[in-house]
Image: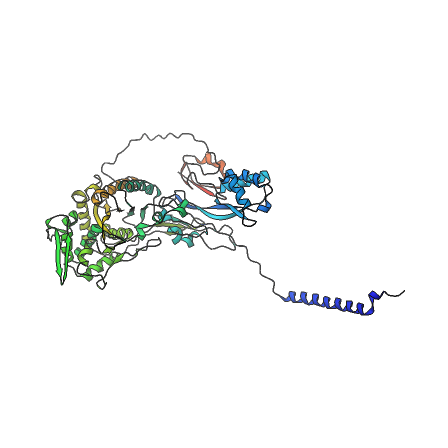
Length: 622
């Protein structure tokens, strides 16, 4: 039998040679791969949970949650009309709109709604499972809920979609609130920031602040209330303000943090700091008298200076000059102190520099020196009455604290505590007492002057009656940004207060900008000072002469309450006993933490908050 010509000897040799070469190539390739270092696999990282922001009493003002983007892959959807009809009610989008988005998708994927909440996600998952829907995808993203909406919004700040703080405490404390990703800790969590703000007091004061803004038709309103002894800010108001849950749609006016970031001429309120300087430097004595004829006039070389006064006050002391807010007498006093010495004391009080409060965008204000190109013979007397100088509201609070503390300013603060994820205390605010800027005698004298101003001066409408209070008002023309000149129609009206005067505990400062109609601070700001001071006194339980007293039998009747139904939001647990709460410990959709014994007196998060995945509800019992 002969071998077919197809399998000739030459062809067989070629075939065997090819197979040998191919085998050698395979062996070489595998050998090469054997000596290549194995690729390192990317380690699993755990996305941290952002810490919460709370008020000084533990009321939650910002906490972590999860949001979801809802997307569809048109090729994976079996029945677009049925899918749209089923999911439309939950997404609150018409079925027609969803069908159009599916049909007109740019590729094989498109988002149909972004940032839905946890309960909406849960509803959609149930619809998908029940109806065997396909082609729907969810992207989980970190989110933030602000239970109090616009309350103290500029302080709390806002977290963007990328999980980073964009303003307020969310920005300045971002690294503490949101730690780096962890390779080892699945439950890594940021620190909780407790503010010095009292949310309940803030709510009460914001109510009268909004009423005042409405009644005066003003452009903006500021209020700061601080603990005179510690520098802790108890209330921080800047209106208009933004709802943090709809922050991206807010206006720039609503986002603006005025008390920290806005510099303005304070007008006559600044006179108390000028008088403190004159007394401490011994340029004047409390018994010295200055004659007011309605105007201050001075000629320096070719420059002629004239500063008008609101009245003809005759021979008056420094105390009476503050009481009547006399420009003439204060300007005369400024002539008795060298400019460099005057500026030294002004700078020492903190004007012209940042206070260091824990908020972004703090202004330094502006204090000219004698080498400034716009310094003139007019500058010193003009600055002494609160013009040609710009300040911030937090600077005013800090400087006023020196009056309340025998000449020692207290640095203002907005953070009370920082607590680690395990509940341990990492930081607790301690008063930072700055260097003494004027004498104790000067401080005591100024409190007496401010009390006199409240009793019979420009601040009479701030008088409370049963609690001693000292005030100083001021109305300043505002600079017209277009012309660079003082406006004839726009005024800034402000007033600072200290109470009680015998043992100062609270500093209160209010600013109303561009009010319509009446602008005189003694008429539109002083009454708000009285209303706000009343609220603060009652809220903090400060002693007052006419405080009501109640008799009680000592018997307490407790109404039996039932466990509230828990669905998508946190219910109100107030008044429930520990025994009633016990069955809730078996719930698996959230974690319940009970602190103390007795009945629920506080809870976090607050009632109405959306229940999110792995949420912890803390209940405080007494």
